[in-house]
Image (cartoon, rainbow, N blue to C red; front, side):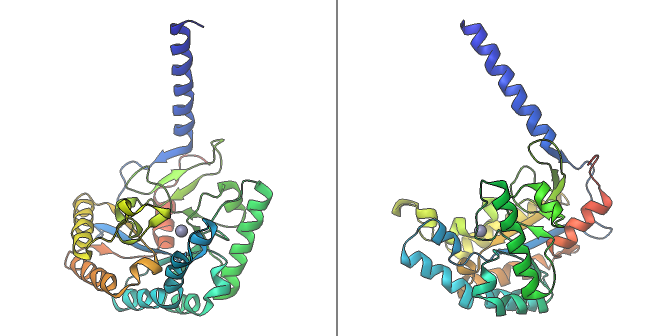
Length: 295
Ligand SMILES: [Zn+2]
């Protein structure tokens, strides 16, 4: 093959990949919140406790760190959000129902949304097993709090999620506003509520996150994170945008971070038109007001 032929082939492959990406993503034009709302802020908690660490075969100290989230952190977050009239969304792996059911019941009773975060914090490659995991997690959450989840934070296949009654996902960061995403074949559309790592507590506070080496350890001053997240909020506020702040009970459940979040929410509330709904409410608003063009 000549250099020119090789280049043509590579360009064709790039074009095919770009077309596949386009077929999977649909961004909403002229997006706007309801009258009187300038920004929607979703406070979301990924209730991982030790499951993710166990899956990664992390050390006993990391597992213990996760346990704190289930025993203490989640309760502090429930109190924080209740006290501030913030309707948080708790993305919960199904297995957590066996470990910390009382906290889920309390969160549900406090008016928070309980959503799915995979059965054991991973998506099996085999599709039949994947479907089994979705069904197990959905039933566990429904049996624990008495309400079937309709949202997920996962890389599960849309066709399976839609079959089980899910209406939205919250992962990825292809845009700063909610957008539509389809399966790899361009079918099965779902609304996605994006978040990104700069508004994820684990990036700043989680010691040895994902088995990182000492040099990559993250114990950031909460005041520094307060400044960063305030700037993120302010920038989105000015353009009528969206913020999906991702917290983990084993990370943000520490007292100094709860106190920082309390100050952040109080500061957000000094602005008019700040909305703190559940992810379900945001998803239903988007689906109803800006439906997908097809599918
Ligand atoms: Zn997680």
